[in-house]
Image 1 (cartoon, rainbow, N blue to C red):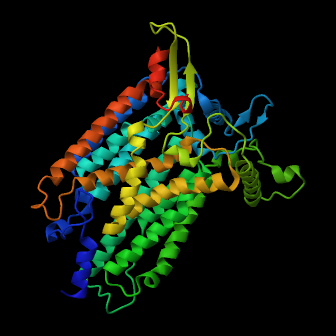
Image 2: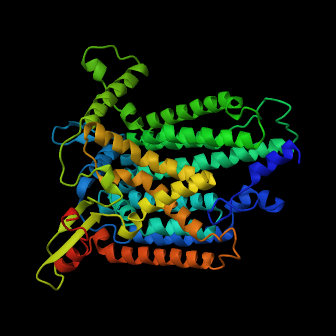
Length: 520
């Protein structure tokens, strides 16, 4: 086999659909299967549609209840309504601009719902429900692209659909659901960039490119990498914590590109393409900054935003363009000081090492009155992950590391990178300065935690290498995976009343407080 032929085989080989990462190289027809054909696979889209409709019903049905602001809704829907009227957040008490410490985009998205349905519960929460549903759609497509399996893609979508944590955040007007949506979309674009880069290298080989004869790397315009930069900018426009993902995703992109060039037979795969990687990376990052600044358009085009004319107020020159940018920089400096020094105690705060264990969920709403047919009643919305699902995350991560190392599977690396980016920085801040944190900070990591579970489920359903010696392995693995999914669904149904605030007897409510005072 020639070097070019071997490179084509390396670039086009895929691990089997069951996520094991092992197995023989598929035949030439499978290896050359077009990405578009996978994308348009009618079975995968039928499964996607069914699950997304189910998710939308769960997130939109009864979304107007309770008919009052819950938890931090006292901030964001109010700010969003002010932005519709004035372009910026407003302090009605002092009749002046409001000082806020989160960028505007999440509130603008909430404002879209208020524009459509008014300043009422449906208007406050509609955009969050759409964002939560879109997260599930993107997760299914990401899982399908990674695992090449309709079954595993549908499993990923179902697990997120049946997660109480994501459900509650999809039904309340907080910012984190929008952050989670844009982070997941950014990862999807990075994944598409991986496939695009490898596909272009393959096309170059087919057109006569000989990596042994020239050190030059084929010219490839990474459109999806640029899209990822735009989406990361939008994520930062919701919350600055989106920047946690930047170095991790950048390292993942470089690792994938070096691996692709090595598979193509390019000598010195790191050095050979480093200039192009850095150049396109810088351009993508510039797009991140441009679209982040665009999220502040309301602040730029008005004169009433907080610190909008800070330099003028303290007697400094405020030239066009540069002056507003310097004022915004000062605003960011003050806001960052606030965030880094936020150590006030809160009854619902928790530490990152508690999140996956559900050590301290956040109560969003409580009402102890109503007619439930018993002397004592309770209605609560509790930000709690579906316990069986969340308590399986840690063992799934352990198995992910094992399979990833043993099989050198790029999917394990990708999933693990998302988990680390979403959780590790919070451990750093917790240890460094003990800043106030809440469990909903973990939402951007949730899709990757679910993908870890799906990866392991796929692995246990994979037939053994010596299938004749272990004829029942696939059957046993399928039964275990099906039993797990049934258990998650039943657990979700049991806790559903405290995800949506249904009225029940106090005894029935307390029966669901599995960890006692930690959940009360």
